[in-house]
Image (tube, rainbow, N blue to C red; front, side):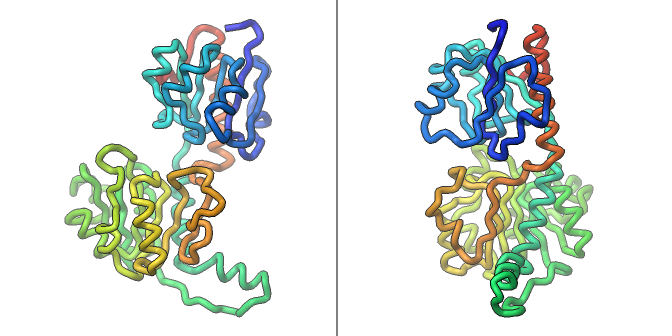
Length: 317
């Protein structure tokens, strides 16, 4: 490591990173726009010894580490990041560290999407601003409806608690969920994935993406849903087959979807999830909150300082 190390902060979309922490020990450059290619990324950060990545916005596969011989420290926001090849980092002598991060912001966004869909907030607000028709949709009451949760971990359990506060019947399922765990979270254990899909009025995805959950909800599963049901996904796009979901929405086979995660991010300009009338889409805002960002960047700076002092902290690889 040089005596005057350079640090690249990637994907600082809002341009807030440098103002949320004291970066005085390193020469830091914030890159606000996503890179369009690996070659463009490598050219931009080739001379940098430290990289700070915002979640999974820029993947770091093995071939990228191959092309960055000067890289010595990689900091990811959060304590896990499936987009980083940790084995490749180790093989190239790159230390990888993480930061803390909250999860309540994702719970809150889940409910923002759900309520926005159920009460048609975007079309109603848009019509009001444009001088359009007064009250042109009929909302859906949540009280007494069934909320189906795919996953009942930290986030799913909190979504369940809010659902109960709304007077909803909460049912949950995952491959490893037990009746005892469901009971503790105030949810019924579904008879299986098919049963949950068939009985729920709202389905919200809170599973970790892995081999068992990739493509878990496909065309067959979507066909089991009520035509009046909504699907909310603030977890990972690949858990739900995106082509099958688009087809179901396009054909009106489900009432709508609230989506915060997509196969390709940023979502391409011409993608139909931007324009389908029964989709409420947000640009992966689940973790984008003031407290999370403050924690991310302050702890990233702490990681850098500890590494420079020879005692790395929150080491992932």
